[in-house]
Length: 136
Ligand SMILES: [Fe+2]
Ligand SMILES: [Fe+2]
Image (cartoon, rainbow, N blue to C red):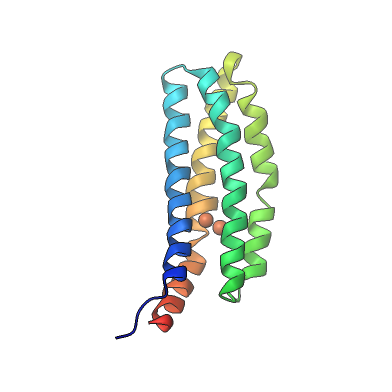
């Protein structure tokens, strides 16, 4: 009987785990704002951004390994998020004494996660599922 190669499973699992952790971070950042734990919020955001960057690099390596045809486009999509990530870091530095910064940060983090991280990855999801089925 054909088997899925363990390496593929582990790598895709790594990507899914990253996404889960990024969702957790987003929830924690939102909760910190709601609970007026602004120092906690300011502490979480740089970790969220650092994980996002590591995640993008891991994802690009995986797409490269499986010769995803749209890799250049997806790489550019990730690179195009640098400004947004810088903005979130700047806002995080202002949350303690600035209500507008808090509300803007809350929105930015949420839409970054939903649109830029999760939704944009739908483009290669089908490709990876197909690549996996070929390994069986
Ligand atoms: Fe991703
Ligand atoms: Fe991505």
